[in-house]
Image (spheres, rainbow, N blue to C red):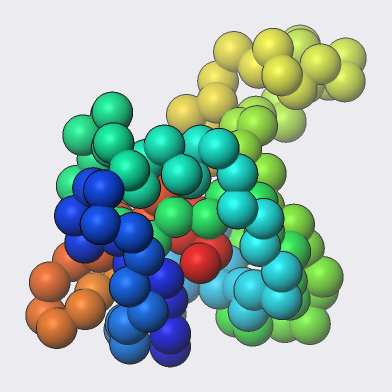
Length: 137
């Protein structure tokens, strides 16, 4: 697939062919139909203040269609229309039950399980970081 890759901070985006593995665990593979370019993306691309591993595919404001759900992604099926969301919430704590997902006490519930393996994206045999866990560009 094609992606806009940041190879070095300050050098912009480079359109490259990248490889992506099948989703595992609770992951879903989404065909991105639209992506917003925001200040956070530009800051990471130009300065990388968090020193995230490069190369990296940014793009966290996405909308698209589920192509393939992982085996534990039971809430999604191929063809579902979805948007990316950076508000991580468990859905089970008191704050989530009260509709205050932005105050979730267990946002780590949405993180990739280390047992599910390493990076899903690669380019020329090198791992590529999914910026902010999404990588929609």
